[in-house]
Structure formats: C-alpha cells, structure tokens
Image (tube, one colour):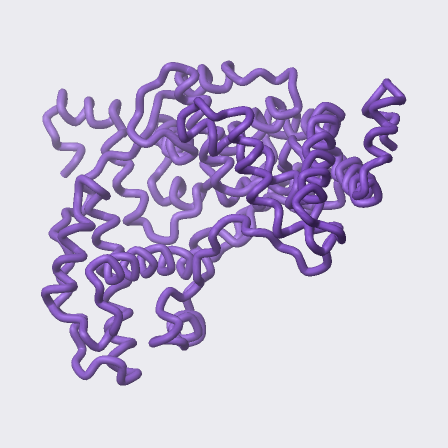
Length: 422
C-alpha cells in the first residue's frame, strides 16, 4: 500500500521500521477506502510516524499509551515550526497535525474518541429541567428543526445566566429576564430574532412553573418587542444578476458541477438550503420528469416538473462529479471523507458565488436566490396564492410581503388613477 504513495524504497523502509508500523498501515488503508487524495495521504503519514517516535522517546511502550502524548507532540511541533507566527496560524497548524493523529488512534485504540469539538448539550438545563425536550416533542409537538432553534436560544440564555452567576432557576427574576432581552437586542440580532427568543423564553418559564421549579409563572413578564407586519423587504436580486451568479461557477471541477446544480435548484424552484441538502436520488423521477421535495418546513411534500436545465446539471454532476458512494443523498462532499453535505454548506456556497459576482446584498446566502425566484414569478404576474404553493409557504400571509418587490405592478398603480386597486 505504501508503494502507491512513495517512490524511494528507503522512505518505505523507515516507515516499516517504526514501532507503530501496523497502526500506520491500518490508517493508510482506511484513508484509501475513504478516497483521500494521494497528496493528502502522503502528507499525513510522516506526521503519524513522527508522533510514534516522539511518544516512544517520552516513555510510550504500548499503543494504548499513545493518547497521553498527543497534545505534547502537537505543542512540540508548533514550537519547532511556527514559533514566531501569530495565534491563528499556530492554531491552524496544530489542527492540521492533531487531526491525522486522532484519526489513526480511533482505529488503533479501542474506545478512543479524542477531544474533538466541544459538544454542546442538547438540554443546557438538564440538571434542573430534565424533561424539557420530551415536553417540547411529545406535548407541544414541535418538529426537529424547531427543537434545534429552541436549543440555540436556550443555550444563549444558559450562557447569560452563567455569566451573571445565577446557577439556580428558582432565582430567576424580572430583572434577570429583562437584562437578557436587553443584551440580546439589536444591533446584535434582528428584531425578529429577539421576538423568537422571547417566545422560547416564555415557553420555558411556563414549563418551569408547571414542574414546580419556579414558584411563580414569570412568562407574562417577557414582553415581545414591537414589530410591524411586512416591515421588512425580501432580499432578492434581479434575474440578470442570478444569471451572473450562475455564470461565475467554474463547472470544470467536480465541486463546480455540484455547486451549479445546487444553485439552479435554489433559483429555479425557490428551495430552502435544507431541502437541497436533503434531496435524494429517490426523489428524482427521471422517467416522468418529476422532482419531489419531501418534509418541507410546512410539513408538506411538493412535486415539481423537472426542468431540462436542472435535470441536465444534475446528470452532469452524477456522471462526472459525484464521488462513488452508497449514500442516497444527491450532493456529497468533494473531499474525503465523502459524506452528504449539510444545509450550512449550501448557504455558504450560495453566499460565496453571490459575493464573487460582485453583488452587494444584505446577508448573502441561499435565501437570496429563493427570494429572487419569487420575484421572477411576481414579474410574470402569477397570483400570490400560486407562488406560495410553489415555494412551500404554509400561510398566504408569508407570501404577501413579496408584493413589495412587484415593482412593475406598483409602478402602474403609481402612474394610474388607482381605480383598479379599489
């Protein structure tokens, strides 16, 4: 296996002479199975071999002793090669060294996990409110994405309580609650986000009172910030700008073929990032030219006619860009280990190509293309009800805000006598 990555026999002999040579070869085989590139494998092997020699020099005699020497080796590596660099490059170099060692140890040492990323608790108030998630799922019937949003706000509230040293939920007071809302307000976040946070906090306080954690229900003291319906304007760009974004994608690479297909889905059907990321091979009916979007935000399923341009882009990606895998998801990571991409990746890629095209828009991301799709339908004089059904809105009120970007229709009203509006 090593002969594939190194030409010189002396280099291969040095690796075989290492006391962790079996573990190194096991790691190399695993990387080959995960389809790591040759350059990536050849770059990682010297790191793990050097780690083995370092651990042996510092007292390691068995493979099970290796985890104790990971951080000392990383710090020694940084000290030798990045001593005079700033903190950010030093951290990046440390991660590049630490990651292959951890990957090898997960294969070689049973039960080894490594430090990895800090795991955020599902319920930050598990000690005092252990049944909170079960309450949200079973009694309130919230969907998983709603639960995820609840967790974000609750973690921020827990961090605030820790910062002001309130460790007992029974000690919550109107002053504590108002302090959190005041600190959470704009310009840190938008008013709509503050409103959502207040809603989560009110549900949480009612639950604490019902469970006897708090003697009094303080939920009524959390006042929603004043907001006005349809006060905002959708983030959209013209269709000419959308075409400019699509033209800026280099479709010669595997990632370019994937990104072009994803951007076309966003712009053509007005899909959300999560809907693009969760699209599977089973959702595309090639025989009948249909595209099915399951588990939408409103809980419904939508079936679209498969656009010729979208179909051609997906075929091109499946034939010449998608890595070989047993996963049913359409869009995969291009770099090993190959896995389905997440919704955050779709958002990031859309933002990247919008900025690359030189288009300035607030909060660039996948939703910009979704709004642009709606604007194009409005310009084609489709009724708001039909547009809402097309993009998967649960309520017609969600579509009404797009009336603000019906520029041509509004211009006719401004220039006319207004009788058609009455």
